[in-house]
Amino acid sequence: MKTKGTQFNLKPMFLQDVFRYSWSKETCHPALQGDWSRKNPAYGQCLVTALIVQESYGGKLVYCKHYDHYWNRFKDGMEVDFTKMQFTKQEKLCADMIKSKNSVLKVKHVANRFRLLKKRVILNTLELWISGASFDNTVDMI
Image (tube, rainbow, N blue to C red; front, side, top):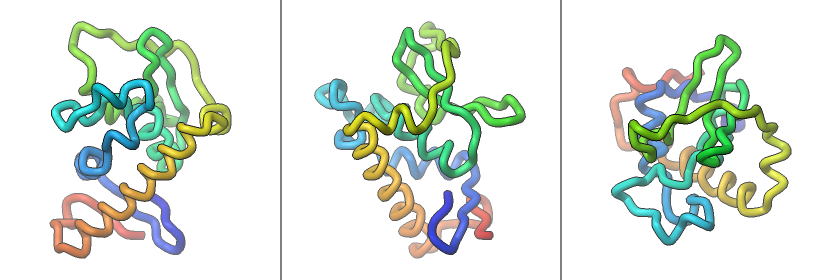
C-alpha cells in the first residue's frame, strides 16, 4: 500500500484482515447494499478491493461477466481474490476479460467507493500499527 512518503508492503493475510475491517455497506456496490451484512463482508466489494490491490501491487483487473466479479492477476500469472469468499464452492468464476482501472473509475459510485475504502484501509492499517499489532509477521515498511 503506497502512501505519500511511505510504502507499506502488506502481507496477504494481514491485508485480508484489513479489508474485512474496512468493508461496509457504504463500500458495497449500491445495488447490493440492501443485502450486505457483517456475516458476508466481502459481498459487493470485489471491484473496489481489486482496484486497491492493483494500485498497491500492479497487475491486471480480471473480470468474470457471469458473476459481475473482479479480482487481480499479477505479472507472474498469480491471481489474488480477496473477496472470493462471497461465493459458494459450486460457483465457478472464469476470466472473461481484462478491464482497465480508468474505464471502471469512470462510474461515479465506483470512484467514490474506491476512495472511501482506500481511506479506510490506510487508516485501519495505521491504527493497527499504532496499537502495537504484531507487524513483524504482517508488514514491511520500506
